Image 1 (cartoon, rainbow, N blue to C red):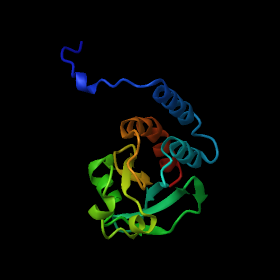
Image 2: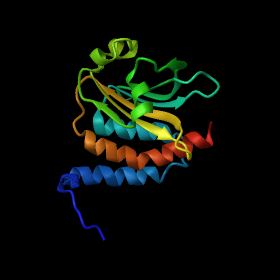
Image 3: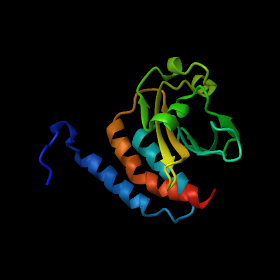
Image 4: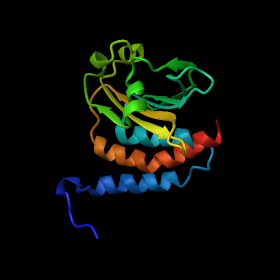
Amino acid sequence: MLETWNPRLEVAWSTDDIQVLDAAVLLSQQSEQAAYAEKVLMFLYEQTHAHVLMLCRRASLTPQGQMQALTILLQGQLLPSQPQYSIEGSPCANVTRHGVLYFPAGVQKLFPKDAYLQHFGINSYFGAPLLDSNSNLLGIVAILHQKPLANPSLLELVLTILSPSLEALLEAHP
């Protein structure tokens, strides 16, 4: 039995938040369907209206710190996957070291060498690692926006729900 309770950990979710969480659970159960990764990013876009959403995979056979953007949404539109890129000097490099990260504002100033942030006018960054069964980094879900995200706590919980199915997808298709 739990003898101590931290009331700061209790969150009161709104009816809309509960609907989003329920939808995330239902979506996670569709992981065997074609285009699942695109469906997840579109779901995240519908919740955040973020400027850029990416599902990236750690590049095997290359030096540490290389990623490939497998699925990218730019303002809700699917873009082709991108070539490998270095995450050195980007917020993604910190996700790999520290777990989920959220920079509500000023991300360009914190990472001035990241040309992608500059090019798209990104001010806010949310990134979550995707891990394999041995807790090694498989990839990252990154949500980039020009303004702070409305509900990062809800987004973190949504990604907690969706991450296992994305991790399984990345592990199954190396």
